Amino acid sequence: MKRKLALLLACVFIIALFAGCGGKTSSGDNKTDAGTAPPDEQETDVIEESPYNFAKGNFETNEKGYPVEPYEYTLPISTTDEVLTYWTSTLLPQYLPEDGYGALDYAIKLNELTGINIEYQVVAYNTMGESFSTMLAADDLPDMMNYAIYYYPGSFKEAVEDEYFINIWDYRDYCPNYIYQATCDPEDTRTYETIFYEDNLIYAFYIMWTEKYQATGKVIRGDYLDKIGLKNTDLVTWDDWFEVFNRIKTELDIEYPWPLTNPIDVVGTYWTSPSFDTLGSVAMGGLPAVYVKDGQVCFGNMTERDLAYMKKMNEFYNAGIIDPNWANYGNSFDFSDKTAKGQTVIMDLHESEVPSASPTGIDPNCRWEPLNRPLLYEGQVLHLGGGKSRVDMGNTSISAKCENIPLAVTWCDFSYSPFGSFYVSYGPEGVLWEYDADGNITSTEFAINHEMGVSWAYMIYAVNSIIEHGLEDTTRKTKYPGGERILEVRRFWNTYDYDGAYEFPVGVRLTDEEREFVNTLAGDISTFISENYSLFLDNTKAFSEWDAYVAQLYDLGMQDIIDTYQTAYDRYLESKKN
Image (cartoon, rainbow, N blue to C red):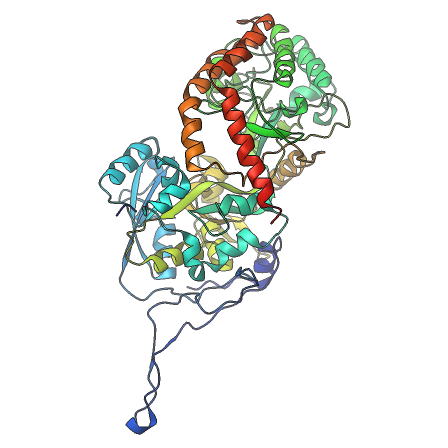
């Protein structure tokens, strides 16, 4: 067949952490009643202690079977000596102890708290795909796996149907916290439809945040704005951007203020194209971004709106604002030498990087300020690219061959419980955090002074939201003097006029047959776009060639892909009527 000391947190903290969804916590003793002997046998009732403190039978559900409040586990969860294998990775292996991930204080204490022994199998991030393929071919998957679902050579649904991974919904009695977090806000369809592939199918435990927001965006040199007598709030429209960058270029002698990167607009955040009612990023190795305008499925990189967007970017290029070497920059690290020399005026940063990137390199006066998305006109309401999410990249799936699936599911679910969420967010007391004189949580000197910065320290010595699962407290990286700056940046980036009218619903799913058909065409189309679309930006292709470029996309089968997605979208809308 194919196929996680009971540290007591203040109630105030627990309530605040789960305020977005509300509710109290509940627990049970999880004892198993072995039954009572018949009276005529004259024997004493026998109550047998279970070796597990599972949630099953100890929490309330609503009419849909969803838990009505968070569930707090009685610890330890297990008193057996069972071992679960966990396949994962790290982006910074140089910071792991000599004895591996399992020797981290975080991992050791997690084992002690839960009573569940985890054997970590850590592979290099860039070899995860190859490693997974080898294990899949041998039908020998570890009990729990990060990212595995991304590498499976089929749909998420097929990975469960082929009995490689479990359907977590079938074990919902053992993961009340994960189900609760996915369903507690009926208005948050994005979270629900990410977690639930179908109403009765969940293929992975995703990392979730305690609030919805966008954590990455564009920043500008605030100290340069000071020199020309402006503020970041003065950059509202595209015309404002053009004028300010030109002034910085000429008055401050910055050769090319905007490095840009080869996706043009960053996939996922979409900062510069939404004002043109499109998603104009270049998705290397995949189809363009999909959206819906007036009920019709559309793809980026091919409409008249994309043409208007490219013409606008071309204006900046021709004015010497965009770096001629832009196509060689995949991300901000690729032009770090320019940034260190003060030649970078605008770039993309994660909110937690904004304070740590100021000052930067050899310029102690560097100060980054957040920017809002440029508009075509003041008061424009954006329809695309501004959706906020509680779900991030990291995820964990459970092998169908795991010998104790309820235990594996419970270990994962612990990371979404009130105490478990705190633990995976912060780790053991004394490493990344401690209490200050007023009893408030504050980052330790170790975290604050870590050579990778506070943000990455939390990603190394506690849950890594890029790879792993759990419920992350979105304030954890702000607990140090100056950390409030992160919250200021967050508020700035997440305040804008947006209605999401053109967003493509997360819950639209292609059937296996539709997906296979699209895949037969997607490769050539993706290659053609990546090799041609961006050429309009820097005059390599004349705009007179735009129509021929679009015609070639249709020759490669783009209309068939649009029709397939339209069918899936219409089917989704019809399902919502039931």
